[in-house]
Length: 131
Image 1: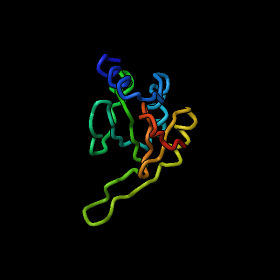
Image 2: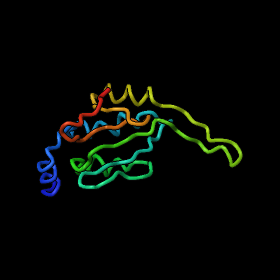
Image 3: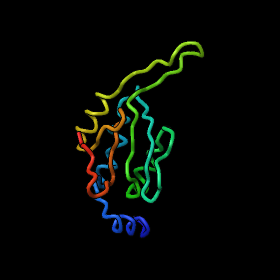
Image 4: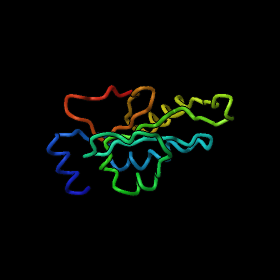
């Protein structure tokens, strides 16, 4: 953990939720189903807002790097497949799969606007409603 992140955590009294072992379990838990490639978005410590768009995660960067700078990661449980210009995308819901994988790996999460949010930290007095 770099000194700026540690200072930010201490100044804001952030509560740690994840440890390195759980961060390392996350990619395997979420990508073990070859039919599901998770779309994610991140909120990093010291950033005023989260990434706007969901994208495919670079799991090497997330878990082999310093994951202590991640406030949270959201995972979109809906897989969308383009079928053409004139018909809507095919949507497959992987919510049950994601929930069972996170629970089975003892990774704490909440559901935020239909997305699975894995928390690295939360602010005192604002504890998420963990599932």
